[in-house]
Image 1 (cartoon, rainbow, N blue to C red):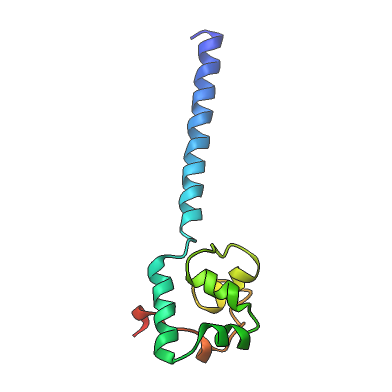
Image 2 (cartoon, helix red, strand yellow; image 1 turned 60 degrees about the vertical axis):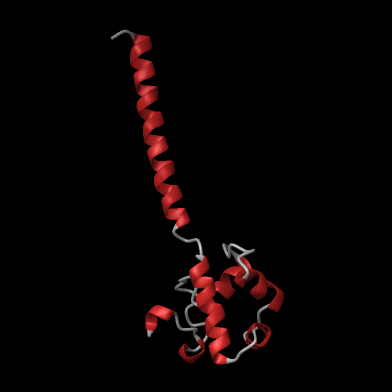
Length: 113
C-alpha cells in the first residue's frame, strides 16, 4: 500500500467513526423529545382534575402562554422556563427540579393506573 492509499484509508476510517458517533448522539438526543401521547396524557390529566392550564401555571409560578405552547407541541422544552414547566408536568426528568412540586401536584400518566 502506498502513502496515498494509506492516508485515504485512515481518512475513511476516521470518517466512519465520526459518522457512527454522530448517529449515536442523535439517537440519544431524540430520546429526550416529548411525544404527542405524553402531551395528550397531561391534557387529559388537566381535564380529569378539572384544572385549567392557566390556573395551574399561575399557581406554580409559570407563564400560562408558555405552558399552553408546550402542551400544543410548539416548544421543545430544551432549556429555561419551558424546560422547568415540562419537568413540573412530569414530561421530562430532571434531578435538580424534581422537588419543584409536591407529589400530590404531579400529574399521573395513563400507565400509572
